[in-house]
Structure formats: C-alpha cells, structure tokens
Length: 544
Image (cartoon, rainbow, N blue to C red; front, side, top):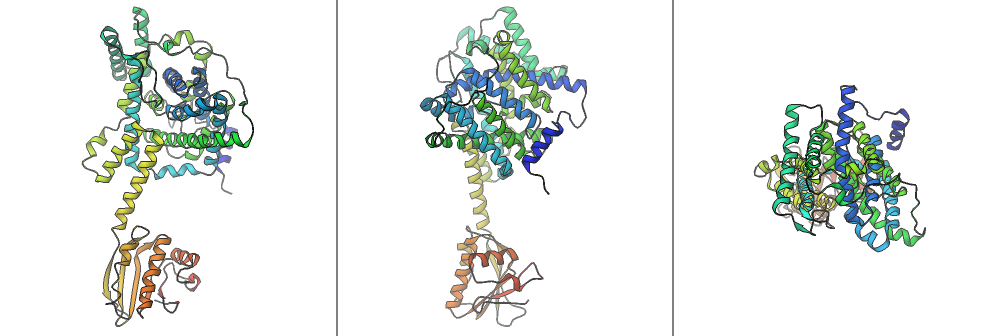
C-alpha cells in the first residue's frame, strides 16, 4: 500500500531521519558552518520578528516566540533542509484587523485553526499544485520580494520610525540627516563590503556573521550613537508557556476566526512553497511540498497554544542561511535555539547590535534575491511573459505575495488559453475510402476557448451528404468542447446530412457518455485506444 503523506511524516520522526547530513556526509567542519549559519540567521530574525509583532499590534515577545517555535518545528520536519521559517510581514498584515477588533486571544485561536487547515492541505497533498506556478510568476515573485525587503529596511533610516501596516516600509518619523545619516550609510556600506569581500579571503566564518560582528565591534568600541536592536524593544523574556486561547468555544467564535484562518493558511502555504522551490533550485533538491505543508501546520498549531503569532517560511532569512553555507536541518535548529537563548540569557548583548549591520546584510540579500537576468530577458521572452513578470513584481510590492501569485497564475492561464484557442483549424479534403465524403482533419485542442472557432470551421450548406470530422490531430478537453461537437452535429442533422466523428479518444467517449452527449457506447471499441467512426444521425459506432 502506498504510504500516505502523514505516514511519511510520522516515519521521519520515528526513524530520526532528520536530514542532518549533506550529500558529502557529516564532519566537524560541516557542523561549524551550520551552527554559525544558524547564529547569523538568528541575529537577523530578532528585528524582523519584533517589527512584524508591531505590525500585528501584539507584544514583541509574541513575534519572537513564533519565530522560535515555527522555526524549530519546520527546521526539524519541514520539506526542505536549509529553509528558515518564522513570523512574517505577509501574515502580520492580515492579523492587524483581527487583533484590533477582537484581541490577541482570538489571534491565538486563529493561528491554531490556520495550522489545522495547513495540515489538512498537506495530508490531501494540495502542495503539489505549486507546480502550476509558471516561471515568469516566480521571477516576478522574487523580484517583488526583493523590493519589499529593501523597502522594509527604510524604516531604519528614520528617527523613531515604525513599520507601517503594509509591512513595506515606514511612514512615521523623519529621515535621518547630517551626521547620523552619514554614519548610518557608512556602517551599512561597511557591512555590505565585508559580506562581499569575506568569502574571497576566508570561508571559515559566514560572511554575514562576520559583517554583523565587525560592525558591532566598531560601533561598541568607538561608542557610536546609532540605532540598535534594543531601541526597537526589549527582547528579554522567559520560556513560552502553554496557554489555551481564552475565547468562547461557540459557533460565533468560529465564524469570526475562520475567514482569517483560511487567508492566513493560504498566504503561509503559498509563501512557504515558493520558498521551498527557490531554495530547492539553489541546493539542487526536489519534492517535499506536502511534508512542508504538514510541518508548517503543526508548527502553527503549536505556536498558537504557546502564545505565538504564527508564521511561515521567510525568504530573506532562508537566503541568508543558504548563502552562509547552511545546507542541513542543523542550521535551522541552531537558529531557533540561538533565538531562544537571546530571549532567555543574551538580550543585553543582542540589544547592542547596530541596526545598520542588519540592514547591510539584508541589502546583500536583496541583491542576491533579485533576478537581475529577468531585466535582460524582458525584451527576448514573449510579451505576455514579460507582462506577467512586471505585473507580479508590482502587485507583490503594492499588495501582498498571495494576491500577486494568484493574479500571475490567472493571467498566465488566460494567456495560455487564448493562445491555444487560436490554434484550432481544419484541413479539408475528400475521403480516400468513401466516395463523395468530405473529411475535416481537426488540428489543435478543442476546449471552452476554441469552441467558437471550431464551429466556424464547418461549411454545412456547401458540404456533401456525408462529412467526417477526424480528431486524430486534436484533443477534446472539456464539456464545452462536447457541447460544440453536439451543436455542429445538430446542424448537420437539421440539414439532412450525416456527420461521422472519427478518432475520438476513449477518454472522450467516457466524457460524452457521462455528459449524455451523442449517446456513445465506448464498449463498442474494446480493443483500440482510438475510436473509429461515429454516425451522429444513426448513433452507430462503425469500424475503420
């Protein structure tokens, strides 16, 4: 019996097959790289989690706890080693109205329901539908996300700025000017230079970690008065405690949280599965979509019961991890444990890290994430693909990721349908086997978009008494196609002529019979994959 997705998930836990090694095996050097990569990611997670907690209107620890728990569970059991998950702006934006109208307890209940829906999606293997996302949509997605990450850093260049409700930047506070702005830009530039040059000197320490460490040492050593992590919020706290959401267990509560849970689950899975594909392309790994859905869902159920705001995959931090050398689950696990240790023990030290160093690292992530080749190919790819790339990029920046992906897929699907609708045509000839009979050799797919063109192919008044529609070069796709065939057949019957359908596939026979069209009996042709002649007027399926 084929093992279910949930069974595979349980088997992974039982066998402790946690993907802790690379294809090259495990070594002390590999462990060092993974741990240091995890430390780099953890440092970058702190301001992100705090900022997104502010966006959602909850305490900073609610965001930090979510980053720890979601990150840990998905690092151990997720579908792709190397991915990093945590509290994200895409989810925080949706949570704003819920928290404002009903309070944080309803948020916790919503996160639990969100997780349950994601587990269901994983068990049903709906994650595989991410393969329907076209490449132009992926390009627009990464470009838009790179711009969003860039804009999100702009808040650090403002005095007392806060991340606005869109999560895309800051509208509060005034821009730094004079000396403070020069110092901020200099530190950001220094961090970026270190991240760029360090791999050329040594790979013993991940370049982003070296950039953060060196710039932090410069700031602390010279006592520079620049914004630091502690200026955003105090991150000191205790262990997350089990907490059942304090909401009424009734239908009214369910009606309140369900719409939010569905939206959050969809956004979380879309962002996570797109990140899964992106990390997979960089690391050469495939598969794991359904497993990732289950892991994301389980992590959100857990964080909902432990006072977290929920989360999903984070592309920026995942890129930091992969570019720092993280290839196994150890890096993600280390990042989560480091984050917890920051909360419990090391908050005074972490709060001294200059935000400029973290901004510099994120700017390098932006440079590495943006698909620069997409600019060059805009004039070389089909116009529709170029439009989709720009459209998805724009919608990602000005709306959100989930809407952008859905819009991109819809536009791509409509463009595909339109292009295929124009392919329908027919080759007309007289039959070689039946004297006086005319053959229409149908070419191209017959579906809802091409039915009008299909009907216009036939010249009923001018055709002889016997007409053959040969579908060897076509494929009947949907009910609209069946209706079109029946419409043409009806016109020939009304004209007192005979229409025969040739080379209709067995699957088409079943569709015709199931839909009640033309009353074809597919059992009349048990030995062949392709049906033969069907006389519309007599209802007889003949040999060929």
